[in-house]
Image (cartoon, rainbow, N blue to C red; front, side, top):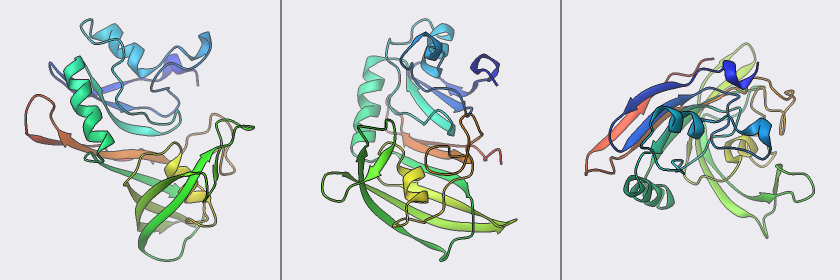
Length: 215
């Protein structure tokens, strides 16, 4: 499936923010090279002519689907970025793992960093890596696969994917993950951002959006 066939769902928008339901397979922001220009931020700027040049305040991996917030103004971007930096944004994900795991809930703490010789792979490095913290809960088992709800405390690159697959984490990769599991490039990855809550940058009101997983 080419990216131009992927439909972008706008869940909500006002003068300050846009909430989208990102499809798996579409970049959040432009990548390197002309073939990676199509992305959510570009599409939104084509729709909203008054949107700032760099509207993204967080990212989802290309093959992760689900809820994202983008800023339309510089002030909204500043206030949202502070909430993300201070871990004040509530985020939850659902995933299907390629196997059955033990236990019902827990916390994963693993430090990891970029593998400079094999980008964009992240590798476990207790000494030099940055810590990633994830809370998890088993929602059920179906056809030998485990449905998990993840609540990340930190927002490291590939955090949920690595915490799922690594033996010191859950030891069971997310279905469709081509980096840490047995998926092939372009497969649908069974990881979806289901909930996103934060204080609206134009006031003190807490708002929350929900999106059921497409799997």
